[in-house]
Length: 220
Image (cartoon, rainbow, N blue to C red; front, side):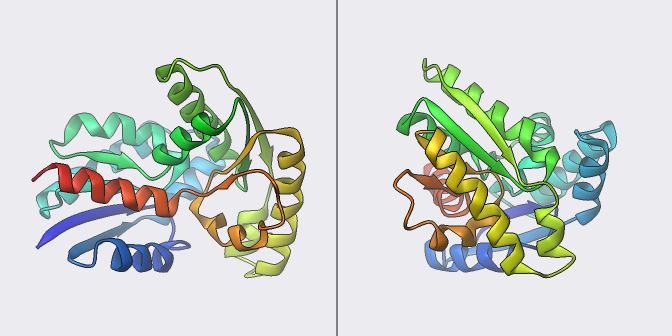
């Protein structure tokens, strides 16, 4: 059986990703490596640290030892550590938000990035800017930070409040941009609340898992 390892920094999107794997790749074994101290550290410091990079590299190497043919990075906040960790494994290590960034660049020149944790803002914006540069396009990326919303969702368990605060910023971003990007997979549930918005609103999980299948199939 083929194996894909997913490296998580929280369990918030675990069940949703399991559902996507079951739908898109039912014959693939999903190995989940979860370390929620990674998100706590990057949120506290505001950027990745040598300690975070070391652990991401260790988890990637362990995933390869466990037989994973592809590794998926679930968290945008540690995306830059994933870029470094690609050098210590011999299997593809893909970021869940890469296909979303490519789609955003394809759809418009003004891109709004919604984030609910500060540490996600810079790496998510940089990923889109780098993707645009590789595509030979110029884009204007504007971040919209809903500060504290992830804590409201994960610690206070108040999904309604989280959704209300995030939706306000999505609506604002949609008025000011061509396309809106939800920087974290934890916001995927917002898509159902955005059907009235006349601009594209993109979330990473489905596109990310579809890309994993594409990469996995290409290895045959």
